[in-house]
Length: 173
Image (cartoon, rainbow, N blue to C red):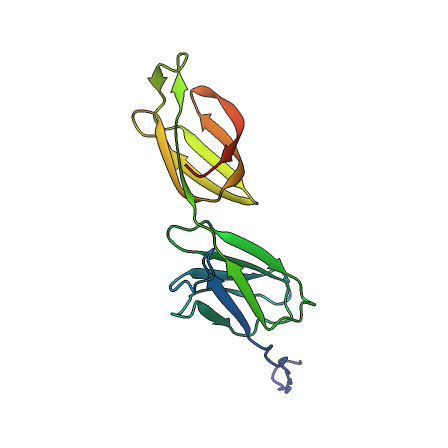
């Protein structure tokens, strides 16, 4: 546009996409109220990032989401986080996420052949593509809640010690 002149530009926005309904249930099929549902678009040309909480029926409606590649995750106190990926060509109008009860994982990081706890060690636990971290207390102890049952990988680091990795199985007590 030349200086001092005006030009009209017409911008046409695309129509809104249909909403996607997400239902969050416990492992017995009961609705979970106030479960946190996070949605992230995997399509860089269609940004969408939102978090909502389920109602008394366990439902959340995510506007303008159908037809996008999405990463959905749900979590609630006492339950392990569940994450799923939905492809852009998925024709479902509703997604159901079942959360399983989580376990409490505790442990102790030690030095000197297990006699002295290491304070301030960072313990990272990986499972199903998700991560949790904890820092050890003055006795070298750590706690992580709502970890799903099954195989996990642990990584421990501290600036004064060598790093360590381990695999473990989280089971019902």
